[in-house]
Amino acid sequence: MTNSGLYFEPLYYGDRLHVVNRSGYVGVVTLWSRIDFVRRQFELAGIDLSSDTSPIAVFGNLYGNGLRELLRNLLYNPQIRVLLVCGRNRSGSREELINFFEKGVAPCEETKIQYRCDSSKVKPVRIVGTKRIIDNLVTPSDFAVSPKIFVFGDLKDSSDMEKIGKLFSGEITCYRGISQEAQRVNIPLPEVEFDYFPSNPRSHVIVCERPIEAWEEIIFRICRFGRPVQLLKGERIELQNLKVVVEHPEEEDEGLLRKYNFDPDFLKRYQKDILSGHIEPDETYNYGHRIRKYFGVDSLEVCIQRLKKDSEDRKCYVALWDTGRDLASKHGHPCLVSLFFRKFDEKLTLSATFRTHNALDAWLVNMYGLIAILKQVAREVGMESGAITVYSHSITIDNRELDRAKEIAREKKYRLVEDPQGYFRIILDEDTIVVEHCVEDIVLKTYKGKKASRLQHDITRDCAISDVGHAIYLGRQLQKAEECLKTGEPFVQE
Image (cartoon, rainbow, N blue to C red):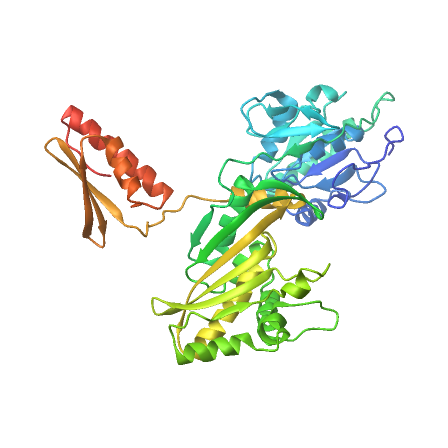
């Protein structure tokens, strides 16, 4: 089976594609389904997957990202005349691929996404009928012949497999071979210019109940607000002095950890190691050694004894940074630089400061280490473990990992947060709006006025509200109350 001497050669993601027959003319796009699952279904359907005779050149996923690379791989391999699209369509990538060829692209001026290629700006375009934005260097007109696309389901229905079997035994064979004029086309892939949303990059505070919940919010904040920086190790997006409070720092469900590719067994070993104080000959440092042996003192044991003697002691501060050594050395600088234990609200809390933080891969691992440290100290002094607060002076995401980070950020859902600073009851008293600021049904302060804007200013001045969602809700209710004053309609707070 020949295709004018052309064999499949991917320009992008060659290490992720499953090549079957390099002289084949069919590409199978498995969307979000595992490639090995789809291949197995094809085998069960009797499809030829021989490296010598199969019409299939390659299997490959298409997640939310990756369409730009797929299109360039197709242009460079014009012998791929057929695309068979199947599998789980979790992000709409199936429609994005189909619409690119059937409906084309349109200018997109409203996006903040920008591209750059060889120092020149490249305009973004949107695939018609979708939200997918790509660069305009590849358009449907660049394809001498658009690939024929056949669409199937998730392959869990036997009828899908019957249809695929019939396709391979009949219609698909007419697409074998390409014209002698077909040439490989190599269009460069422009770099995405990361465009961040405005914020004070040193003002972010995250308060969550559980570690994974906090980690997810960290990834979202950095993806949305992180500033681009150029380090010796490469490009990053960064926030400064991020404060994260985990109110109930407990180990997470192992299934949830695996969802994000965290190994529960590794985390358990990490917790054990950070408490041991042992250092291997090939290690320049580790946190346990710095805490328990490096300075000639077991800092955890000293803190335990101090807290046993005085539970209100405020000197249980542990420094891991060795200024004399660490400022001068080229290697082996600890990221965790301090711990502070403090009894608060009858619980033992822990505050930890990190010089630098890898948000994607290190933050949650470090949190597990802190959980182990807090639990041991609390157990020894006979206190209940409380919150853990983590300060990260510099917390970053590697630009090479942005696709993975953005997938996590996109999963964020709205969650109702109870404002720790209380709630508000609103009533109308003749021609006045009355707002009661309450906690546990006790009125802390009453605000009165005829204008929602004035009440808003008074409440803001008092820092009486802390949650953005709560503030938006209160604003809606105040405006509704003002409208009811004007119209005479009864006011009912939502």
